[in-house]
Length: 309
Image 1 (cartoon, rainbow, N blue to C red):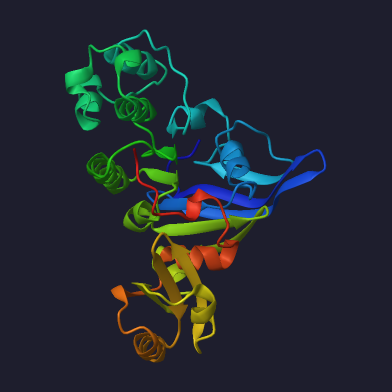
Image 2 (cartoon, rainbow, N blue to C red):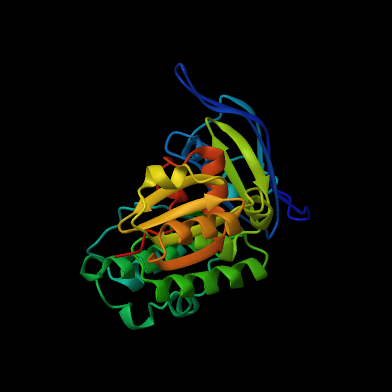
């Protein structure tokens, strides 16, 4: 393995077949060392297949994949990689400290134990058994295990699911510090606020192909409209007939109107319903841009409103 290159991941014409299903269709993607990218796509888009190939869990059907100068699954690559999956089965009778020590033993140059426990907020839980931890505490342990080998490359699959906002933001701080150390990070997340806060680049996958690969801000600017949200007596069908209205979505008592002519639409709204309430006008969001590319009925990857329990 080479360590003197700035290229962390190089993917050329990657294909993956499952029988007659063509899950990945000529994917090309490069990442530099220390870069942070987010992958997003609806169920069945090929995102999981791509991650599985990169992690060495599945062989590619065609194409070339280079990771830190080696091949996916190579021992040298695995020893400098960390993985945190959305669902992980661990020996739940072991104590936190025992689990972290076990995983550290798998690596030639692991991160110091006490440093790991402190970094992930497990110092006060090190003598608790894994099965006695809350869901959020177990996610902290899984994060510590992903960092046990002091990785150069980190795969994170929905790392903050089940965590409240305060703990999520602490995870963000840790990930920022890892990126500053030159760790290359690949993230999948339901939370678009998380992606906006962390990722240098967003890669959108649809039907086995990358349809967008750009800075998050650039992708967000692909959709230039305003969202008018309000509570109004006007029916959705009436709102859709207003000139300049692109779409209307109702969630609960509020209706959100997308438009490129917000001033005209606002005047019409207020004229037809002067008693409307909860009026708010916002610029288009990253969610709007994603939905425009992969459809508003895509899975929860595009839903930034889901809150952790």
